[in-house]
Amino acid sequence: MNILITGCAGFIGFHLSKKILQDSNHKVLGIDNLNNYYSTKIKKDRLIQLKKHKKFYFKKVDISNYDELRKIFLKNKVNVIFNFAAQAGVRYSLVNPDSYIKSNLKGFLNLLELAKINRTKLIYASSSSVYGEQKKFPVLEKYSGVQKNLYASTKLMNEKLANIYHQNFKIPLIGLRFFTVYGEWGRPDMMYLKYMDAIKRGKTINLYNFGKHTRDFTYIDDVVEILFKILKIKKKQVFENGIYNICSSNPVNLTNFLDYIEKIYGKKCKIKKLPKQKIEILKTHGSNSKIKNLVKKYKFISYKIGLKNTIKWFKNYYR
Ligand SMILES: NC(=O)c1ccc[n+]([C@@H]2O[C@H](COP(=O)([O-])OP(=O)(O)OC[C@H]3O[C@@H](n4cnc5c(N)ncnc54)[C@H](O)[C@@H]3O)[C@@H](O)[C@H]2O)c1
Image (cartoon, rainbow, N blue to C red; front, side, top):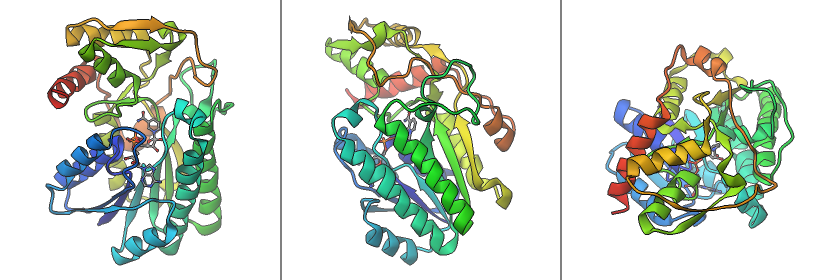
Protein backbone atom coordinates (compact mmCIF):
# COMPACT_ATOMS: atom_id res chain seq x y z
CA MET A 1 0.00 0.00 0.00
CA ASN A 2 0.96 3.63 -0.42
CA ILE A 3 0.34 5.58 2.76
CA LEU A 4 0.29 9.36 2.86
CA ILE A 5 1.27 10.76 6.27
CA THR A 6 0.90 14.49 6.74
CA GLY A 7 2.98 16.09 9.49
CA CYS A 8 5.54 13.26 9.16
CA ALA A 9 8.30 15.46 10.64
CA GLY A 10 6.12 16.09 13.69
CA PHE A 11 6.04 14.03 16.88
CA ILE A 12 3.21 11.55 16.20
CA GLY A 13 3.58 11.51 12.39
CA PHE A 14 7.27 10.67 12.73
CA HIS A 15 6.67 7.76 15.10
CA LEU A 16 3.90 6.26 12.99
CA SER A 17 5.98 6.61 9.81
CA LYS A 18 8.88 4.84 11.53
CA LYS A 19 6.65 2.03 12.77
CA ILE A 20 5.11 1.42 9.32
CA LEU A 21 8.53 1.47 7.63
CA GLN A 22 10.00 -0.94 10.18
CA ASP A 23 7.13 -3.37 10.50
CA SER A 24 5.51 -3.57 7.07
CA ASN A 25 6.21 -3.39 3.37
CA HIS A 26 4.12 -0.32 2.79
CA LYS A 27 5.49 2.79 1.13
CA VAL A 28 5.26 5.97 3.24
CA LEU A 29 4.82 9.29 1.49
CA GLY A 30 5.56 11.87 4.11
CA ILE A 31 4.67 15.52 3.79
CA ASP A 32 5.33 18.42 6.15
CA ASN A 33 5.80 22.16 5.76
CA LEU A 34 8.57 22.13 8.42
CA ASN A 35 7.22 25.31 10.00
CA ASN A 36 9.06 26.95 12.87
CA TYR A 37 6.35 26.78 15.55
CA TYR A 38 9.02 24.84 17.45
CA SER A 39 12.64 23.94 16.64
CA THR A 40 13.01 22.93 13.00
CA LYS A 41 16.17 21.08 14.06
CA ILE A 42 14.25 18.30 15.75
CA LYS A 43 11.90 18.05 12.74
CA LYS A 44 14.91 17.70 10.42
CA ASP A 45 16.52 15.15 12.76
CA ARG A 46 13.33 13.09 12.75
CA LEU A 47 13.38 13.20 8.93
CA ILE A 48 17.01 12.00 8.91
CA GLN A 49 15.82 8.91 10.80
CA LEU A 50 13.00 8.29 8.34
CA LYS A 51 15.15 8.81 5.25
CA LYS A 52 17.23 5.79 6.27
CA HIS A 53 14.34 3.66 5.03
CA LYS A 54 14.15 2.86 1.31
CA LYS A 55 10.36 3.08 1.19
CA PHE A 56 10.16 6.58 2.62
CA TYR A 57 9.57 9.55 0.31
CA PHE A 58 9.44 13.09 1.60
CA LYS A 59 8.03 16.24 0.08
CA LYS A 60 7.95 19.64 1.72
CA VAL A 61 4.37 20.74 1.14
CA ASP A 62 1.82 22.82 2.99
CA ILE A 63 -1.53 21.03 3.26
CA SER A 64 -3.27 24.35 2.62
CA ASN A 65 -1.94 24.13 -0.98
CA TYR A 66 -4.51 21.92 -2.70
CA ASP A 67 -2.88 21.82 -6.15
CA GLU A 68 0.43 20.55 -4.78
CA LEU A 69 -1.31 17.97 -2.61
CA ARG A 70 -3.39 16.72 -5.52
CA LYS A 71 -0.30 16.23 -7.71
CA ILE A 72 1.40 14.07 -5.08
CA PHE A 73 -1.78 12.18 -4.32
CA LEU A 74 -2.52 11.24 -7.94
CA LYS A 75 1.07 10.49 -8.91
CA ASN A 76 1.47 8.02 -6.04
CA LYS A 77 -1.90 6.26 -6.03
CA VAL A 78 -2.44 6.77 -2.30
CA ASN A 79 -4.45 4.05 -0.49
CA VAL A 80 -4.65 5.54 3.02
CA ILE A 81 -4.17 9.04 4.43
CA PHE A 82 -3.17 9.81 8.02
CA ASN A 83 -3.51 13.47 8.91
CA PHE A 84 -1.28 14.76 11.69
CA ALA A 85 -0.35 18.09 10.09
CA ALA A 86 -1.95 20.81 12.18
CA GLN A 87 -1.18 23.84 14.22
CA ALA A 88 -1.03 22.32 17.69
CA GLY A 89 -0.76 24.09 21.04
CA VAL A 90 -3.35 25.95 23.08
CA ARG A 91 -1.54 29.11 24.24
CA TYR A 92 -0.13 29.85 20.76
CA SER A 93 -3.71 30.32 19.48
CA LEU A 94 -3.70 33.65 21.31
CA VAL A 95 -0.58 34.71 19.41
CA ASN A 96 -1.12 33.37 15.89
CA PRO A 97 -4.78 32.52 15.25
CA ASP A 98 -4.32 32.58 11.46
CA SER A 99 -2.09 29.51 11.49
CA TYR A 100 -4.93 27.47 13.07
CA ILE A 101 -7.38 28.48 10.36
CA LYS A 102 -4.90 27.83 7.56
CA SER A 103 -3.61 24.41 8.66
CA ASN A 104 -6.43 22.98 10.73
CA LEU A 105 -9.39 24.15 8.66
CA LYS A 106 -8.28 24.91 5.09
CA GLY A 107 -5.63 22.16 5.21
CA PHE A 108 -8.06 19.59 6.55
CA LEU A 109 -10.73 20.53 4.01
CA ASN A 110 -8.15 19.97 1.26
CA LEU A 111 -7.48 16.46 2.58
CA LEU A 112 -11.19 15.67 2.58
CA GLU A 113 -11.35 16.89 -1.03
CA LEU A 114 -8.42 14.62 -1.90
CA ALA A 115 -9.98 11.65 -0.16
CA LYS A 116 -13.14 12.33 -2.17
CA ILE A 117 -11.37 11.60 -5.50
CA ASN A 118 -11.04 7.84 -4.91
CA ARG A 119 -12.93 7.45 -1.62
CA THR A 120 -9.59 7.02 0.11
CA LYS A 121 -9.47 6.07 3.80
CA LEU A 122 -8.66 9.10 5.94
CA ILE A 123 -7.63 8.72 9.57
CA TYR A 124 -7.28 12.11 11.24
CA ALA A 125 -6.12 13.61 14.52
CA SER A 126 -8.65 15.33 16.70
CA SER A 127 -8.03 16.20 20.34
CA SER A 128 -9.28 15.75 23.90
CA SER A 129 -9.54 19.54 23.99
CA VAL A 130 -12.90 19.30 22.18
CA TYR A 131 -14.43 18.19 25.52
CA GLY A 132 -13.66 21.48 27.25
CA GLU A 133 -14.09 21.37 31.04
CA GLN A 134 -15.98 18.24 32.19
CA LYS A 135 -17.31 17.17 35.57
CA LYS A 136 -17.96 13.47 34.98
CA PHE A 137 -15.05 11.10 34.34
CA PRO A 138 -13.90 9.09 32.46
CA VAL A 139 -15.17 11.09 29.49
CA LEU A 140 -17.00 9.08 26.84
CA GLU A 141 -16.87 9.97 23.14
CA LYS A 142 -20.57 10.85 23.17
CA TYR A 143 -20.09 13.63 25.76
CA SER A 144 -20.11 17.15 24.43
CA GLY A 145 -18.44 20.19 25.91
CA VAL A 146 -17.72 23.86 25.45
CA GLN A 147 -14.38 24.46 23.75
CA LYS A 148 -12.16 26.93 25.56
CA ASN A 149 -9.77 27.99 22.82
CA LEU A 150 -9.37 28.33 19.07
CA TYR A 151 -7.31 25.14 18.80
CA ALA A 152 -10.13 23.08 20.32
CA SER A 153 -12.74 24.72 18.08
CA THR A 154 -10.78 23.88 14.92
CA LYS A 155 -10.47 20.25 16.06
CA LEU A 156 -14.21 19.97 16.66
CA MET A 157 -14.81 21.57 13.28
CA ASN A 158 -12.63 18.83 11.72
CA GLU A 159 -14.95 16.19 13.14
CA LYS A 160 -18.01 18.06 11.81
CA LEU A 161 -16.52 18.54 8.34
CA ALA A 162 -15.56 14.87 8.30
CA ASN A 163 -19.16 13.95 9.11
CA ILE A 164 -20.47 15.97 6.21
CA TYR A 165 -17.96 14.43 3.79
CA HIS A 166 -18.78 10.96 5.06
CA GLN A 167 -22.51 11.48 4.63
CA ASN A 168 -22.33 13.21 1.26
CA PHE A 169 -19.43 11.41 -0.43
CA LYS A 170 -19.09 8.13 1.50
CA ILE A 171 -15.45 8.78 2.37
CA PRO A 172 -14.12 6.14 4.83
CA LEU A 173 -13.09 8.09 7.93
CA ILE A 174 -11.92 7.66 11.52
CA GLY A 175 -11.35 10.53 13.97
CA LEU A 176 -8.97 10.12 16.92
CA ARG A 177 -9.11 12.32 20.01
CA PHE A 178 -5.58 12.20 21.39
CA PHE A 179 -5.01 12.96 25.07
CA THR A 180 -1.62 14.52 26.05
CA VAL A 181 0.77 12.30 24.13
CA TYR A 182 4.34 12.22 25.46
CA GLY A 183 7.54 10.33 24.74
CA GLU A 184 10.86 10.22 22.91
CA TRP A 185 11.30 12.78 20.10
CA GLY A 186 8.45 14.73 21.72
CA ARG A 187 7.36 18.29 21.04
CA PRO A 188 9.67 20.76 22.82
CA ASP A 189 6.70 23.10 23.41
CA MET A 190 5.04 20.58 25.73
CA MET A 191 5.33 20.92 29.50
CA TYR A 192 7.24 17.71 30.26
CA LEU A 193 10.03 18.58 27.83
CA LYS A 194 10.14 22.24 28.89
CA TYR A 195 10.52 20.92 32.41
CA MET A 196 13.43 18.64 31.50
CA ASP A 197 15.03 21.52 29.62
CA ALA A 198 14.66 23.82 32.65
CA ILE A 199 16.24 21.16 34.88
CA LYS A 200 19.14 20.76 32.45
CA ARG A 201 19.79 24.50 32.18
CA GLY A 202 19.03 25.37 35.81
CA LYS A 203 16.34 27.76 34.53
CA THR A 204 13.12 28.73 36.35
CA ILE A 205 9.92 27.43 34.75
CA ASN A 206 6.38 28.89 35.02
CA LEU A 207 3.91 26.39 36.44
CA TYR A 208 0.34 27.56 35.86
CA ASN A 209 -2.56 26.75 38.15
CA PHE A 210 0.12 26.05 40.77
CA GLY A 211 0.65 22.64 39.07
CA LYS A 212 -2.83 21.41 40.00
CA HIS A 213 -3.78 20.21 36.53
CA THR A 214 -4.56 16.57 35.92
CA ARG A 215 -3.76 14.96 32.59
CA ASP A 216 -4.48 11.62 31.00
CA PHE A 217 -0.87 11.19 29.83
CA THR A 218 -0.60 8.72 26.96
CA TYR A 219 2.70 7.21 25.88
CA ILE A 220 3.69 7.50 22.21
CA ASP A 221 4.39 3.74 21.84
CA ASP A 222 0.79 3.00 22.80
CA VAL A 223 -0.50 5.58 20.33
CA VAL A 224 1.58 4.13 17.50
CA GLU A 225 0.63 0.52 18.29
CA ILE A 226 -3.04 1.49 18.16
CA LEU A 227 -2.63 3.45 14.91
CA PHE A 228 -0.86 0.45 13.37
CA LYS A 229 -3.71 -1.82 14.41
CA ILE A 230 -6.19 0.61 12.84
CA LEU A 231 -4.20 0.52 9.60
CA LYS A 232 -4.74 -3.24 9.46
CA ILE A 233 -8.53 -3.06 9.84
CA LYS A 234 -10.23 -4.17 6.64
CA LYS A 235 -13.91 -3.98 7.67
CA LYS A 236 -15.47 -1.05 5.80
CA GLN A 237 -18.14 -0.48 8.47
CA VAL A 238 -15.46 0.70 10.88
CA PHE A 239 -14.68 3.73 8.73
CA GLU A 240 -17.91 5.62 9.31
CA ASN A 241 -16.31 8.62 10.98
CA GLY A 242 -16.38 6.93 14.34
CA ILE A 243 -14.65 9.07 16.97
CA TYR A 244 -12.30 7.35 19.42
CA ASN A 245 -10.51 8.57 22.54
CA ILE A 246 -6.84 7.63 22.43
CA CYS A 247 -5.82 7.71 26.08
CA SER A 248 -4.36 5.53 28.80
CA SER A 249 -7.38 6.38 30.98
CA ASN A 250 -5.01 6.80 33.88
CA PRO A 251 -5.01 10.48 34.88
CA VAL A 252 -2.00 11.80 36.77
CA ASN A 253 -1.72 15.01 38.70
CA LEU A 254 0.79 17.28 36.93
CA THR A 255 2.78 17.84 40.12
CA ASN A 256 3.23 14.07 40.58
CA PHE A 257 4.25 13.69 36.94
CA LEU A 258 6.83 16.46 37.29
CA ASP A 259 8.08 15.11 40.64
CA TYR A 260 8.72 11.79 38.95
CA ILE A 261 10.71 13.54 36.20
CA GLU A 262 12.93 15.14 38.89
CA LYS A 263 13.37 11.77 40.61
CA ILE A 264 14.50 9.97 37.44
CA TYR A 265 16.48 12.95 36.13
CA GLY A 266 18.22 13.13 39.49
CA LYS A 267 17.86 16.90 39.79
CA LYS A 268 15.30 19.44 41.05
CA CYS A 269 13.64 22.10 38.89
CA LYS A 270 13.25 25.76 39.83
CA ILE A 271 9.54 26.56 39.63
CA LYS A 272 7.52 29.77 39.62
CA LYS A 273 3.93 28.90 40.56
CA LEU A 274 1.29 31.02 38.79
CA PRO A 275 -2.54 31.11 38.70
CA LYS A 276 -4.54 29.26 36.05
CA GLN A 277 -4.87 30.72 32.56
CA LYS A 278 -8.41 31.16 31.23
CA ILE A 279 -8.01 28.99 28.13
CA GLU A 280 -6.67 25.96 29.99
CA ILE A 281 -8.56 22.85 31.02
CA LEU A 282 -8.19 21.61 34.60
CA LYS A 283 -8.56 17.89 34.11
CA THR A 284 -8.56 15.37 31.29
CA HIS A 285 -9.50 11.74 31.80
CA GLY A 286 -10.91 9.78 28.91
CA SER A 287 -12.55 6.41 28.65
CA ASN A 288 -10.60 4.09 26.35
CA SER A 289 -13.20 1.30 26.25
CA LYS A 290 -14.31 2.15 22.71
CA ILE A 291 -10.81 2.03 21.20
CA LYS A 292 -9.94 -1.11 23.20
CA ASN A 293 -13.02 -2.70 21.78
CA LEU A 294 -11.98 -1.78 18.26
CA VAL A 295 -8.37 -2.97 18.45
CA LYS A 296 -9.19 -5.91 20.72
CA LYS A 297 -7.65 -5.71 24.16
CA TYR A 298 -4.76 -3.40 24.74
CA LYS A 299 -2.60 -2.85 27.78
CA PHE A 300 -1.29 0.69 28.14
CA ILE A 301 2.23 1.41 29.37
CA SER A 302 2.51 3.08 32.80
CA TYR A 303 3.68 6.69 32.90
CA LYS A 304 6.67 5.69 35.03
CA ILE A 305 8.04 3.44 32.29
CA GLY A 306 7.16 5.96 29.57
CA LEU A 307 8.91 8.75 31.44
CA LYS A 308 12.03 6.70 32.12
CA ASN A 309 12.39 6.02 28.37
CA THR A 310 11.72 9.67 27.54
CA ILE A 311 14.31 11.00 29.99
CA LYS A 312 16.89 8.55 28.67
CA TRP A 313 16.25 9.82 25.13
CA PHE A 314 16.26 13.49 26.27
CA LYS A 315 19.64 13.18 27.99
CA ASN A 316 21.12 11.56 24.93
CA TYR A 317 19.56 13.84 22.28
CA TYR A 318 20.17 17.16 24.07
CA ARG A 319 23.73 16.34 25.24
N1 LIG B 1 0.81 15.51 20.96
C1 LIG B 1 -0.35 15.58 21.61
O1 LIG B 1 -0.39 15.48 22.84
C2 LIG B 1 -1.63 15.78 20.86
C3 LIG B 1 -2.84 15.81 21.61
C4 LIG B 1 -4.04 16.00 20.93
C5 LIG B 1 -4.05 16.14 19.56
N2 LIG B 1 -2.88 16.11 18.86
C6 LIG B 1 -2.94 16.28 17.41
O2 LIG B 1 -2.17 15.28 16.78
C7 LIG B 1 -1.54 15.79 15.60
C8 LIG B 1 -0.05 15.61 15.68
O3 LIG B 1 0.44 16.26 16.84
P1 LIG B 1 1.98 16.35 17.20
O4 LIG B 1 2.08 16.39 18.67
O5 LIG B 1 2.71 15.32 16.42
O6 LIG B 1 2.32 17.80 16.63
P2 LIG B 1 3.58 18.33 15.82
O7 LIG B 1 3.48 19.82 15.82
O8 LIG B 1 4.83 17.72 16.37
O9 LIG B 1 3.36 17.76 14.37
C9 LIG B 1 2.64 18.43 13.36
C10 LIG B 1 3.53 18.50 12.12
O10 LIG B 1 2.74 19.07 11.09
C11 LIG B 1 3.48 20.03 10.38
N3 LIG B 1 2.51 21.00 9.86
C12 LIG B 1 1.80 21.92 10.56
N4 LIG B 1 1.02 22.63 9.73
C13 LIG B 1 1.23 22.13 8.48
C14 LIG B 1 0.74 22.45 7.19
N5 LIG B 1 -0.14 23.44 7.01
N6 LIG B 1 1.17 21.72 6.13
C15 LIG B 1 2.08 20.72 6.29
N7 LIG B 1 2.61 20.41 7.47
C16 LIG B 1 2.19 21.09 8.55
C17 LIG B 1 4.44 20.62 11.41
O11 LIG B 1 5.61 21.15 10.78
C18 LIG B 1 4.74 19.42 12.29
O12 LIG B 1 5.92 18.77 11.89
C19 LIG B 1 -1.98 17.25 15.51
O13 LIG B 1 -3.12 17.32 14.70
C20 LIG B 1 -2.35 17.59 16.93
O14 LIG B 1 -3.30 18.63 16.98
C21 LIG B 1 -1.67 15.93 19.49
